[in-house]
Image (cartoon, rainbow, N blue to C red):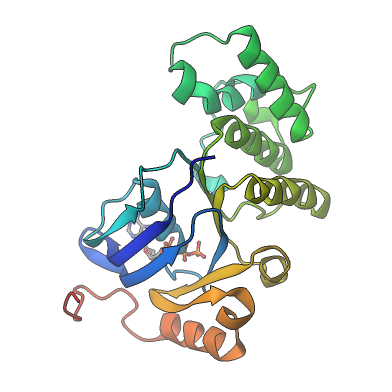
Length: 247
Ligand SMILES: Nc1ncnc2c1ncn2[C@@H]1O[C@H](COP(=O)(O)OP(=O)(O)OP(=O)(O)O)[C@@H](O)[C@H]1O
């Protein structure tokens, strides 16, 4: 599996030139499993968007050691348009697009891969169901099937287990743990500290700027969590200009 270290270099991100994440420096090791943790509005989704290439930095850069790895990004559930008239099978098969092209038909091997992915997420038998008719948990399983088919070296997950029951969470978490064993790099925005402590060896704690990054037990110390909360609750949460000079 081709995986490359991900380097965030003096990264400042924002919208309409208003910075939301300031001067972030961090290296995420190839093949590691990192949780991005922080209060609401800390800039976690913004960071994932930038790593995915969907948001250009205001300053600094997202770099990879070696060639840019194939990347798969699971956005927050609310951002997925389910009104599109697609079946579960058609939706999950989008994970094969990078290999077969948007208009390429599924060959027998692709169909077998699709069936195996739906089976792996517990959605075998749902292939013809419209995605608009799925429960939240079934949709999340379908999104994971698409991720499986993308077969990416770098996997970005934005709150993958929100409003998902314990059984589905455990099933999908087992898939994530398997990706790590396969040498893929996993970066996940998570709010559930218990899950982070149980499954994610490394954590990047963000509160508009970097609070801590390293082993999860160290990064999530009470002092760091307090500091993160204070940073986000501080006045002027969305400064019109970044006052700190570029490093
Ligand atoms: N499309 C956008 N346009 C303008 N501002 C935005 C946009 N998306 C996010 N923001 C702002 O950027 C800041 C960081 O938002 P972001 O969604 O990255 O936070 P988060 O840490 O993921 O929060 P949460 O835990 O609530 O999902 C917030 O102040 C938010 O209002």
